[in-house]
View 1 (tube, rainbow, N blue to C red):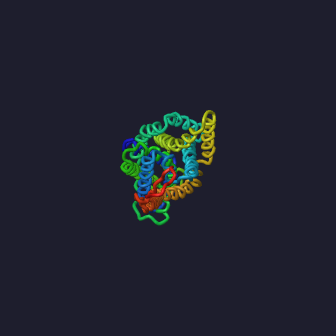
View 2 (cartoon, rainbow, N blue to C red):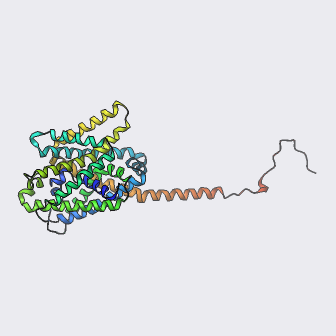
View 3 (tube, rainbow, N blue to C red):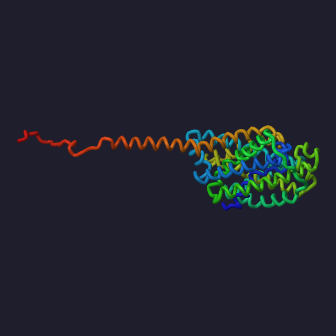
Length: 353
């Protein structure tokens, strides 16, 4: 994928229902230093995204990266990441139902049906959906700004929440990022472009919420409170939900391809049903209970990946290279000369003259 296409994909996985309605932004960046904390979070997010894309490009996707970094423990880490992917799936489905509460669960079921159509084409379908919907989403956010956020130095707790937010989003989409990195041309430039867009969108939404006053800040979905009555906003949330849901469901359904025959279809049905049942917690329930825990997991996962890739593997290679040199040196220590070779004859030996 090209730079812009990859950037759209990254933005589509990050800006979901919780982001656009302001629910998760106020939870993580609701303090006085919200703008600086958001900037720090986007910087960390940029670095982690570039790293995950790099891993996918180097090791040919998510499965190859897990084997290279975790060896025998790859299956355990893979299962943990796939379990984490259920959280954004539930959040997006809950967000769709929150838009039209009188018709639940029809909005979430309709969203699942639409996403499954694109997922039938694999990663190309996910990428195409992002290219199709993310530009519309960005245009809406850029033209919906109603206020500004004052810049202030963030406190230690605000910085910590910003770090958790960045690692949380990285953990949500780590499998999809690595698979996308396999065909990405410029991981760093795509990550910079995407993180910049996420920062601008977050600043606009926070500015609109804080500009609307305390009632908006304390609302369950603050930006939805600001944009109430706007049909365009509902359409924008739907776009955000579809792109995020597709990237979250993609690795889960891809894992089902390992099964054969009816078992594969049964596994997909179980995954879809589990995500739908988890979404019954509601958007605020998912954000308040599960998102912070995923942020901690994402921080640990990112740190372990960086350590294994840049420190442990290099140290491991040095040990093996020294062992190899020692073995080679040991083989060449006793050189065999011509006089060391004794004659071998199958005849009866006779005395020499």
